[in-house]
Length: 159
Image 1 (spheres, helix red, strand yellow):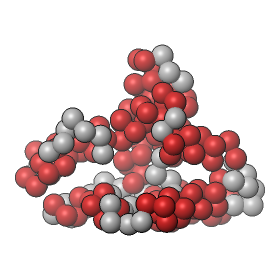
Image 2: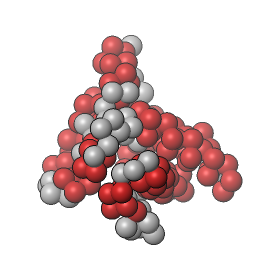
Image 3: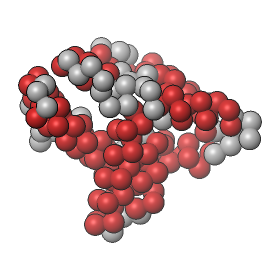
């Protein structure tokens, strides 16, 4: 496998890539992207089972939805909103192609489907991504980070 070393490096890097938005509210050691993705994957898997969707597909989408952040980093929504959307999407897509295209094109297709928000599993994963963020915000708030309420202001909205 041509990209095996790079893929494994990316996988392991996700374990130490922090969800940076939590630094804004004073969380010194926030969850990693890997921890977040694990939770999103399992939440999507459970939701898909309950709704009669393809649970394996939802699980894989959830586990891999932020895999590109091993190279791009986690960019919080307020900062991301200031970036040129077309340039950002191009950079994200290029990283995803580097990670998957040569050896797992079916994963690249799955992630492109997710990025496009097509299909019930993709929509579910996007919803679970937002729900996991809100659940984590509630946990941080209950552990003394009152500013985590900022992440709950739009609880009815997806993030």
